[in-house]
Length: 206
Image (tube, helix red, strand yellow):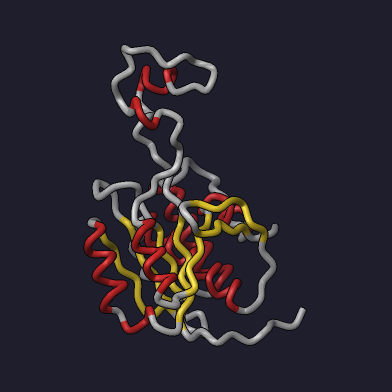
């Protein structure tokens, strides 16, 4: 299949965590799939500052992962969050959003970027890993999984500039998001999974 041309010069991937307690990462690829920037952030305002001040954001396409809301994933609260379980008065944690599974963090900023003319879409990082043949052969985001993923990105996709020391899981996922952004920009086939907070979440075929 002949690739279509793209008007974008930069392809940005954002691996977004659901809170500032965990790291998020941004990766910028150029048209030759060379990593121009790979950085890690914790606070929402730092990510916003990157969007406002980075020269890469202009003439680019941005793919941001949809983070899962894991605030219910502890002990007995897991049981009470089941869809078939009645919500009693004793349930205090996340009582107003007990069926919520996705985090809306940074959604307003992404919508603002889209209004400014940036091509923005979302993705599911687990679906992308499967589509690119980067399945988690070990427990996701463990040291073994990250080492395997980093080695696979080097060997299978030619990211030889990656260091020998192990990168954070969010940095590796940001690279995958940036790869998907470039794939979209050059006319790759996608399917819409769902729309989240006004922005389409796309998937890559296997």
